Image (cartoon, rainbow, N blue to C red):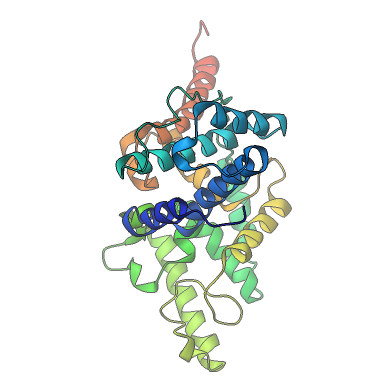
Length: 307
């Protein structure tokens, strides 16, 4: 795409400043739109927003399918276009949206990957004695916090020390769209956080890193600076690969799934789990009920005389 499209920038600014979406989400929207308009320009030449028809949209979607792009990814791109054209319609740039009657491909439901309670207990034992260096200490804290709170990687990376309220035994999390939610914190988690904060002050005061505002950032790397996502992701992936052999996926999000699944399996209310995860609707949370149902089926099969 040779020239920038003003309508795209206007839409991105809307997502950033009005919808207050995360940088990751905004980048995904932007990449989808650039890909769509590049396709149109390559195949059909320069086309104005008003000239984009349903058939042109279908042509792009067909090309994605031909390239073996997954149904899940195609659905996300359709959602991007729907939001984009809805915004243009609202602002009078177009009179009708080309997304009318554009059907999303069906997605086969995937159950959330999670760690079994016994495996998690074994992992905790390994981590308890695995604090020889700062990376190991961070690995322990990442696993502990992700499982105890169910927060997202982006939420943890941007956390400040002041978000932990030791007296009320809770943690304030700033989620998607800058929405706040409160997560209860058990004494075991709070003690681990206290220990981490104390160690952080000792180590980086000794190194003269106080000027980096080390005490403001929740988690820091070996240089006393705020963690970046890839570093945290790789620490979690590394320990899960090494210690939990049954997992197909090994990422921080697996621990979020584990948090939710264990809550549901132990009788937590669906609405409560929704609030703890920071989901906008119950539809996102209901995927965890399947695992609970499977557990009930196993219990029924073992315990009921006629099962």
